[in-house]
Image 1 (cartoon, rainbow, N blue to C red):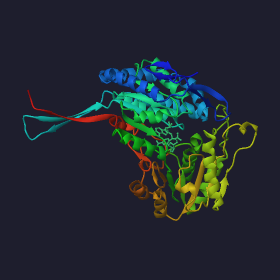
Image 2 (image 1 turned 30 degrees about the horizontal axis):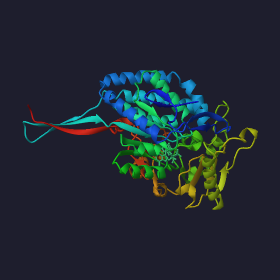
Image 3 (image 1 turned 90 degrees about the horizontal axis):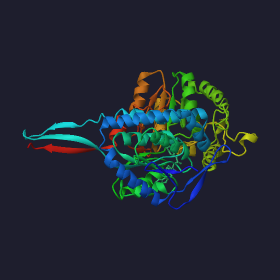
Image 4 (image 1 turned 180 degrees about the vertical axis):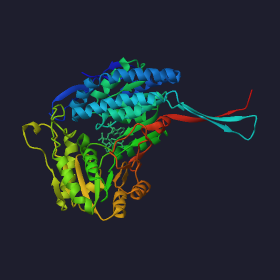
Length: 476
Ligand code: NAD
């Protein structure tokens, strides 16, 4: 049985309760894990607060050295960790390997920043005094993670937090704790000191983290409704919050685009991870002359995405993570079809014995989806893509911005002026121009509108795990 990790000790829940983690491809039990609650979060927060007193005072270059060594140890175990992720989450082994690799690389990327904290000198009117702005770590940080990219999204929070000298109480999604535990175990085995990262498990631990008085900052990736609740709860103690929430990324393809490259990026963007990604092509707007050739290319690509158990090397798309999640996407597709949409590809569940016990779904492309359909107004968190023909960029931008969300976005065009206009006018935290929607470590990532606020990745994320303090030196 897997355990939680508090102060580098493998620990059961104080209540003794447990729950099962199941494989979304087969329904089989993968492992049993502790069902933690408020008491366990309290232990973890106390451990993190104790560790903060030494970790935050460690010389930054020493901290960087420890984190690099821990990351190297974790990266040596990617092949062990990837199948664990596939079994609990459903994604293909290739996707799991990429994700596990990204975890270690992210720790290393932020480790490089640990000894590069910069402040400022500020001249003051009285020449016998001078001002400084210094940066300090915040304290204990809470990291709350969803199930779609359990490792990447944990690393996005843990890596900048600990590199900046903070300590962490980490809560994976209840259904995907196992690969995360394996990654943290590997960091500890590689020398991460006790209490720097503590892992608690169970659905109630998220709320307990947000409410715990020792925890000073909360970073959540999750749905927009969860973001609202977390922000309201965090307001009680005026905690800092970073909210990475839902999205419905528009993609505009103009007539002068490289359609082969666009089709590849849209297919990866919509179907990677079985469509369960925050950054994903979720609404497609295509100019008239590009429409027919692009649809042909997209359908050809979708038809090659064989659904299957992620452990099977022939599978190109794993199952959805839960039956509820699949039912939600199916209801959104049905709503579009009921309103008159045409199914260009997929639209149902794959048939065959191997699909009987898992939450499989076909990659799906729908055209003529009427205005007001759920696929346009809600986040579609699965492999189903609504497509619409547009006359020109004006119409594309108007429709793209007609959303409560503002996470990612993309445009495909050969026209620099159209690209520039899109960069300026699209309401989103990220715009890709003729490029695959991949979040880079180097660039700050985060949303606008109902997609949340605050940044992960980049120097910006690192700085958000520090606090500025002004100092006046009056001389001695
Ligand atoms: P979710 O909001 O249900 O859960 C996310 C995490 O929050 C889980 O660990 C959950 O246990 C915890 N949680 C739930 N209620 C809580 C509460 N009241 N207080 C504290 N913690 C609580 O989301 P999900 O279904 O696991 O993930 C899918 C959602 O995540 C989608 O909306 C997706 O767009 C979003 N997401 C966003 C990003 C991004 O970076 N913007 C990335 C990936 C996923």
